[in-house]
Length: 156
Image (cartoon, rainbow, N blue to C red; front, top):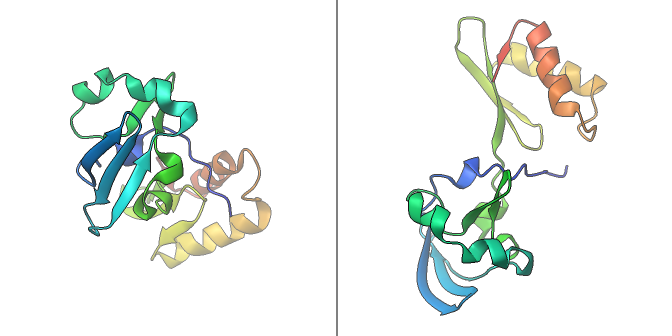
């Protein structure tokens, strides 16, 4: 299943201390390390994002995001996507939180439309929906959300 990032920046808005810049090699190359694993890596600003990377205003005004995150119109983009560390490449954001009518969190849906829940009833409902809705449909997320709401769940 292909994960389609929305480039909303939510995943990296509080990740400013997960990547440490050890040394700036050039304007667009940095020796870095992943703080969580201690693994060194070379971060290179993607060629198509160099112009937005040059503008440091946003990152100077926001102290918690990853230092390589930048606004680009309505998007918030990772400027080192091609050379980002594994922790970034494998991350799948939460696109939906599913609650019962009383407001108890029952499960979360990640960006590849996978349900993560221990609630048997919700999992069965999700499996039923998967038989009817293709994950590859452009409107699949909306259709899953409507299906859950029709079954009495609250979705955010």
